[in-house]
Length: 336
Image (cartoon, rainbow, N blue to C red; front, top):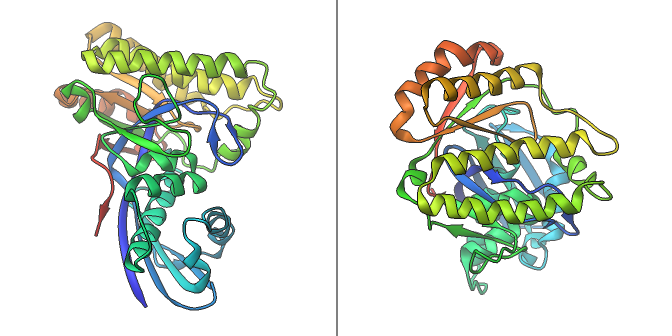
């Protein structure tokens, strides 16, 4: 068997996408920090065959992943028509623990899409824009996976202030002050359990949601405002939008039918501690949340020492087993 390997990062959305149209089209634009350390490494082994697929996670055969992989290959059949004529072995591993509040579907599906693009290239099939095509394919496996193909920031969804932005693929974004290119993301592992409601189900509950249209309009406005803040180096303005976006995401969950809560009591305790720390010390520490209980702490690299000290002294007590992960803004995927 021939093989190809890509390492692709996860990402953390600053402006959140929540709600989508068929197939995997975002109801509103989003922008994210690409992470550095949190990544999925995928080796794709392939040989002529009849479309047999085997999946291995951390070296262990994992047939439970097959339905998602097969759906992805069906959706991308136009881009990767050769997949059905090959036997595939997918060997994947994450640099972070499962259910840790890091989007493994984003890093995993983007890594697989990049592998398939490399196979497409190796087979001599036409490729017009390698990373754009990889982003479009990744989107069909995981919406946020479209953004993992680019760094240090990536924007997905059509937005008037981002040239070339598109609903079918993400674009790299780098028109930001230098401080944002080295921003830190420390992830507090408040809860390591499986989510009670999957993101796929949560997105679906935006259909017919009482506040959906207002939320989609708000995301467009917040995207425009956060771009201005990042261009101007306005950390305080940036932080206010990021925190509001995180709370709005969870407000949509709590006001859907059926409603659900993914935050835990310690999530709220962390948020209150961050606000008190910022008020008392003036340090620019902000939070965001994904669709889960864990808290992403965002702050400039220049404040890393004092904030890590605060995490150790005040915040890790709210973490499961005192666990947290340190990461920062990264540059995107790499072929290994």
